[in-house]
Image (cartoon, rainbow, N blue to C red; front, side):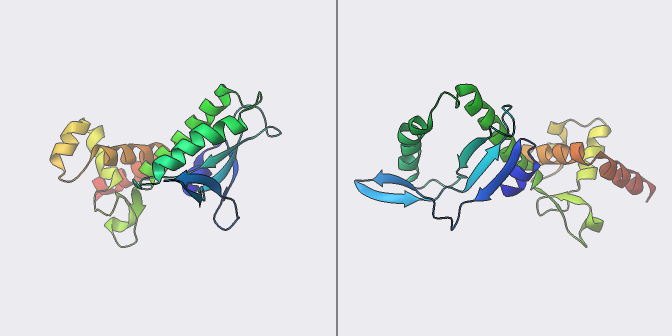
Amino acid sequence: MAQALEEVPEVIRYVKIHNLGFTIPYTLNGEERQYIPDFIVCLDDGHGRDDLLNLLVEVSGEKKKDKAAKVSTARTLWVPAIACPACDRRRIIAAKEVLIMATETTNKKSWVQKTPGVCGGDACIRNTRITVHGLVHYRQLGLSDQRILEAIQGLTPDDLAAAWAYYADHPEEIEEAIRLNEEA
């Protein structure tokens, strides 16, 4: 998530909350508990650097028994408590869009890896030997995403999305790899 936040231009600064002493109280089965969100993110949502939107970010993936209690506390107690005229709905929607961009960045771009000694150090999908330049070349030759998925066992639509996102950010690198591969 931190890597993704680094790549979102609206994010001005952020901090990992671990060891800052900041906790959010909640109740589970009548027992009071505390949890530590993952990040505080300050972002420019169009109101300028003097009026940044501060967000608490919880990165979650696992289903845990106390997750529903945390979510309920945030929705019913925290959000109304911080609601103010300056924190209008448009700002919250803008913040969600930025975090969605950050999440998509994390989910897709982090799947592309360059490992010395593997495929000449070229960008590959996950821990495979499937190169981004190979996938892009297939697409340039006219193969549809569906046809590429059928041709390469174990490849997923998310893998292709990661390859296309990487190519969009590194077109010169990938075009050069395609050229060098054709010359070999």
